[in-house]
Length: 95
Image (cartoon, rainbow, N blue to C red):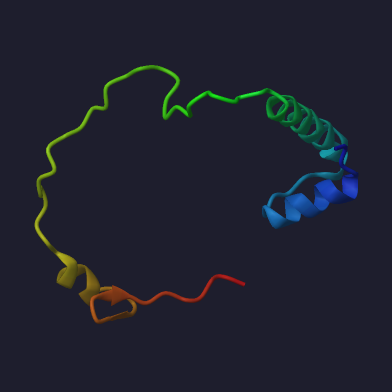
């Protein structure tokens, strides 16, 4: 699925990235090679293969689930710009 330079510019804008005009072709070629690799990976038959959480059999290093810090929520919320009912109030950022 080859991309055009306009599509690369649109993707960069959506990702909030700045791509200089001189490197748009190089970026497009890199993205195209990534898409080729993804197509190759999707064509592999994985029937009967269980998903793995990690490529190596490693034991999970877990620590004891114990409280190590004191509850200082009231102190932190006292200096917060806006807090209500134990929650921090923040501006809406989703368009």
